[in-house]
Image (cartoon, rainbow, N blue to C red; front, side, top):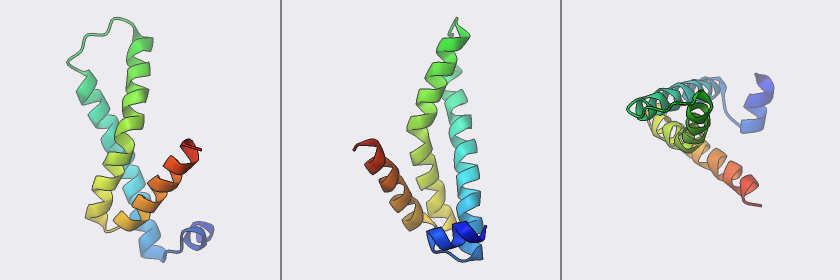
Length: 90
C-alpha cells in the first residue's frame, strides 16, 4: 500500500477513496453491461461474452469518472485515464 501511496502521491484517505472508486466503478460497469445486453436474445454464449467484454471496455472509464466525482478523486482519475489512452494510441 505504501508503494501505491508514493507512486500516486496521495495520503491514506486518498488511497482508500481511489481503491473504493476502482472497485465500485468495475462493479457498476459490469452491472450496466448486463443490463444493456439483457433485452437482446443472443443465441451463442461466446457472442454474448465478446459483446460484454467490448461493452465493459467502453463503459469502464465513464463509470470510474462518474464515481470519482462522488468520491472527490476526479483529478486523479482524469489523469489516470489520459495516461491509459496515451499508451493505447501510441
